[in-house]
Structure formats: structure tokens, C-alpha cells
Length: 79
Image (cartoon, rainbow, N blue to C red; front, top):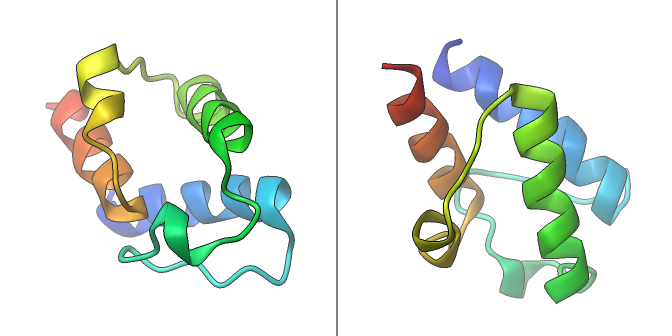
């Protein structure tokens, strides 16, 4: 998948969790979205893992601070 394809899939997932009107960019962080609490963070991670057929370990998850971090990790896992 290209970076744009990954971003598109993650955006679709995030909008299902946080609301269709949520604006998502690669720079969007948890502090930018009111609904992005700890529970929704877990839901976001598990849904991305399931939908994109990837698996993140705990150290990777700890390092995620914005949407672009998800894309970076997924790109690394494709190679």
C-alpha cells in the first residue's frame, strides 16, 4: 500500500470512532480530538491492526503521538 492508501484507510477508521466530521491529517494528535481518550485509543489501535492486517507491540504503541506515526509504522511493517 502507498502512504496515501494507508492514510485513507486510517482516516476512514478514525472517523468511524471519533465522528464523521472529525478532520484528520497526518499531524492530528490525540490532543486535537476531544473524543480521543484512552478507550478510543485502544479501539483505534485494535481496529487499525484488524483492518490493515498489522500488529503493533507495546513499545510501538507508546511512541504513537499523531496519525502520521501509525502510517510510519505500517510502512515499516510492509518492508
